[in-house]
Length: 239
Image (cartoon, rainbow, N blue to C red; front, side, top):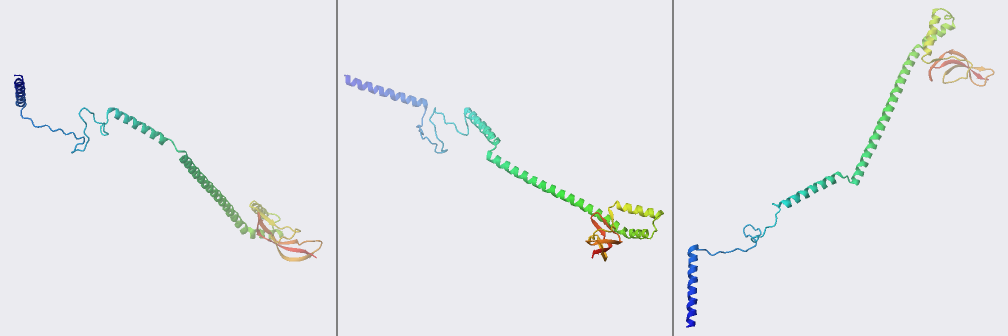
């Protein structure tokens, strides 16, 4: 009957499938059940998991050759840009630096001018002191010879130096002293000057309007503008 035939065929097919399963199990041995972990984050390392066949994203620690070359190019560009920026001076800083340099130059110039002025003044002072020291030395010598000149005048007035070797020596001495600026003050008939004359006697004078030197008792001397000794004179005064 058809109904029993189908059941028999179905049973035979089931038995055959069981036999095949048993043979497969016998050929492969005992297999443990397979558990697949589809979590996207590794619970141990904490890193992200990627499905099979999908390439992980490039990490910063291991860049690809293209990324490495791009990074090198970026680094070179940054280095070049930094070098260019370092080579360019900012106008504000440049102006400040120039202003400081100019101020320092002006200060140094002022110091130099001040030192030069001090040196010039020092040199003038030294030259002036040297000239004064030389003049004082000459004046000292002349003052020491004034008594000798007084003796020569007295001898000449008494007629002892009219002729002879002593007259020649006296003349040479007086000429030598003139080379050092010695000037005799012995003029008569001139107006009385208290800066170069010393009035010992005053006498009334005729036909005069001012005090006048009428007689020189002792000659005076001066060297340049300096009076070494005033002349002792007799002064005639108006009546």
